[in-house]
Image 1 (tube, rainbow, N blue to C red):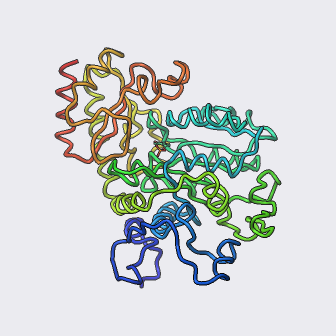
Image 2 (cartoon, helix red, strand yellow):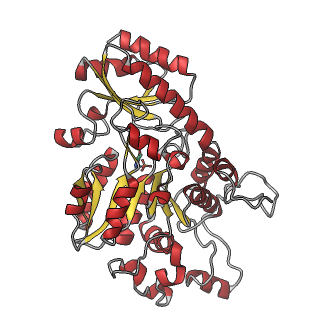
Image 3 (cartoon, rainbow, N blue to C red):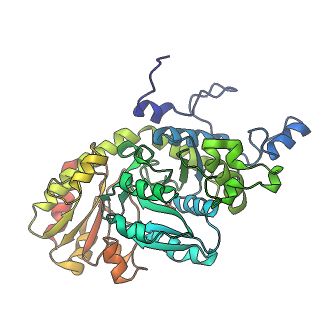
Length: 427
Ligand SMILES: *Cc1c(COP(=O)(O)O)cnc(C)c1O
């Protein structure tokens, strides 16, 4: 074996997996079982007491899930990971682990519409308060931090506008106030951006998008960066106080730099329940193997499509940080030199009506609410993903009424541009 740390593409294919020790199967088997037999009563007791690590019940842990977790932790450069049934399930477990009723967190106002709903609406029932801030405005983030703030949450590449965020600058202000930085890295994927290298403490993904990549399975994952000192302040009691059900164990003392991932599993997933199905873990793992190839093709196709649209006289504007003239281009080159991702927005000179006509005229592009599929996708955010938001929130999130969002697939670029061309001709 070479001594060097394997490269990203090698990790994407191999990290966390070995030929099956029992059967020799080369692909990771789908362990389609709810539960696992104990060796004896002592073994069972030590598993339940967290004295030994092993499988008990698929809600908490499963060998197919475990390979997916190791794979994504390696791709992100984290210490451990926890896979969940969806990206939203992952976010719920993260905040359940760090928030008490009455606590608050700062979140970027440029986020996936579903996250804006989850934070602004569902989390209200738990009395977890969200404070929105422009991720490009460090003072606005800092001025909202108080003694009940427990975290800062951003997207590395913000959905739907496709803008990169200065992760290192935000990490610095979060750490100055003793707070972890949580980064949703769904849109960039670790092929483009590895947030932990820029100061993030926790990375979260919707695996549903680029890591799975084929639009066939839901999944989420939490990656523990292993960087945050959970015992420093007493503000994170799940990690820093004795757990009666585990014999008074203090998770951060026992598990050190992967305590956050453990807490998310043995408290969050155990009690809240959004476990990923083994079959979905298998499909997402298969997708992860080709992430580097797919992501580069997504980026190359998106850049060509954005350039072509930008030169079209029915197009009012294109917002894609891969374009040299884009306001976000310098940050893109700093954080994501291999490309600017698959997703971008543009506005048609004809406004809302033209946008609807355009979306309905496309043939290769599918009109649906998803991103990160091998297939090219299109949506009109103001009437779909972002419709629950007020007009002000829509515009702040880059999803105003004239905006069309594209997620460029891995088809031949000539066919992608041909489809855009025929649809624009009908507008
Ligand atoms: C889709 C998405 C989510 C939510 O993930 P689900 O798997 O749909 O629950 C969160 N963040 C971003 C950026 C997303 O695109």
